Amino acid sequence: MSATEKQDRIGDVVVVGGGPAGLTAGAELVRAGLSPRVLEAASLVGGISRTEQYRGFHFDMGGHRFYTKSPEVEQFWNEMLGDDFLDRARLSRIYYNRTFFPYPLKAWETVRGLGVIECIRITGSVVWWKIFPHRQENTFEEWVTNRFGQRLFRTFFKTYTEKVWGISCQELKAEWAAQRIKGLSMKTAVMSMLFKPRNVVKTLIDRFRYPRRGPGMMWTTVADRITAGGGSVELNSEVVGLRSDGTSKIEQVVVRQNGEEKTISADQFICSMPLTEVVKRMDPPAPEHVQASASQLKYRDFLTVCLIVRRKDLFADNWIYIHDPSVKVGRIQNYGNWSPEMVPDAECSSLGLEYFCNEGDDLWTMSDEALIALGKREVASLGLADAADIEDGCVFKVPKSYPVYDSAYREHLEVVRTWVEQFTNLQMVGRNGLHRYNNQDHAMLTGMYAVRNLTEDASHDLWSVNADQEYLEEVQEDSQKQPATVVKPRVRGVKQTTGAET
Image (cartoon, rainbow, N blue to C red):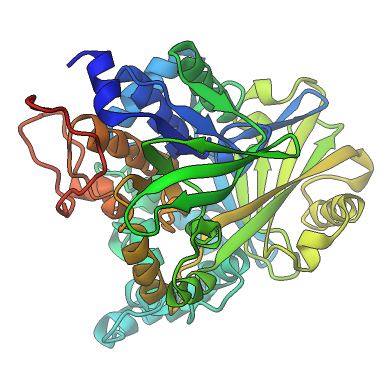
C-alpha cells in the first residue's frame, strides 16, 4: 500500500505527548509514510527522560540506563544515535546506617558493613520466612519478606521504598515489586554476590549504554527525524481539552499555545497524557463514577536539586541510593560518571539530588534557594562533598513521575480503562497514559504497537506491555512467533478502503 493510500485509510494522526512513547509513535508513523502532529506541553522533548541544562551542564532527570532485551528497541536506539552511545560500567551503592554498601550487594563488603552477628540474624530471618511465609502476597512488604526475610526487608528495602512512594510498604501493592524486581530471588542475589551470573536480572546488570549528552539527546534526535520526515513536533503545546462525539470517537483536541487556545481535528489519537487528565479534560464530561475513580488514581512526583561542585572526582558511583531516614534526599546522581560530556568544566562535578514528593507538599512548594541550601547541607552531612565547594545550583521539577500502586488503584484503573476504551480512535500509551510503571523501553514499545494497530491492522493490547515483557519474550525477531501478551479483539476507528485488503 502506498503512503497516499495509507494516509487516506488512516487519516490524520495527532500524538499527545513528546516523551519516549509519543515520540517513538511519531517516528514509526513517519516511517510508515504518515505525517503525525506531536503535541508536547513542555519546552523540551523527552518527558521524564529529558535532559535539562544550566550553565552548560547537563542534568538527567532520574538517571536513564539504556538497556533492553527488546531487539526492536535496540534497533531503534542504534538507528537514532549509533556512535553517540557510550558503553558504561555500572557502579552504585546504598548508604545505610552511615555505611556505603555496593549495589548489587557484594558478599564480603556486606558482611563487613553489617557485621557477622547481623548477617547471621538476617540469614535466620530468611530461613524463617521460607518455612513460614505469608500465605498471600498482597503488599510490597509481604512480597519482599517472603523472598528475603523480614530483617533484610527492614535493612535494605523499607526506608528507601517509603521515601520513593510516600506511603507505607504495607499500603504499596505487591504488584509493583513483582513488576519491577521480578526474577530477583535470595538465591539470585547471593549468587550475584559471589559469581558473575549467566542470566542477568535487569536489576543487577553491570553495564549499560548511555548517550554522550544524556537521554534527551535521543529524544531531540527522534523529534528531528519526525520533522524531517514530514511530521511536526510542537513544543509549549498543552492539550487542555479533548472533544468527543459522546459515544465512540474523539473528534478534536483543544491546545493552548502561547496563551491562546485552538482546536485541532484528527481521525486518530495516540495519547501519553496522564490518564487522570484525559478524564478531567474530556468534553462532554466523563460519567461521575469514572471521574470518581480517576480522582483516586495517584502519582508520585519528584524534583532534582542540581549542584555544581568545584571539585572533580567526588566519588566513583553513577548514583547512590540513600536509605538513611535522617536526610530527605532519596538518590544522588553523579552526572560526570554517566558521561564526561555532561560536565563542561573538568575541574568540577555536578550532582543531582532527587527528592520524592507530592505536588503541593512542603518540599514541592519550597523555594529553589531553600532547596539548594537543603541539598548543600545533606550532601555535606553524608560526607560526599564540602558545602564550601558547592558554587551554584538549580532545581527542576517532574510532576506525575510515578503511577502509585496503592491498595485500591487496580479497581479504579479498571473503571477508567473500560471507559477510555469505548473511544475506538484513541490509544493510550506510555507510563502515565496507561498508569503503569513502565521502563523507557517498554513505554517505547507501547508507541510502536499503537502504530502497528493503525498501519498493520494489528491487535496489540497496549495495557499488557509492562516490565514482564522481557520475561514473556513477546518481542521476537522471528516473525512467525506470536506475541505472548493477551490480545483483545481490535476495534479501531480506521477508515476502511473499499474493495482492498489492508
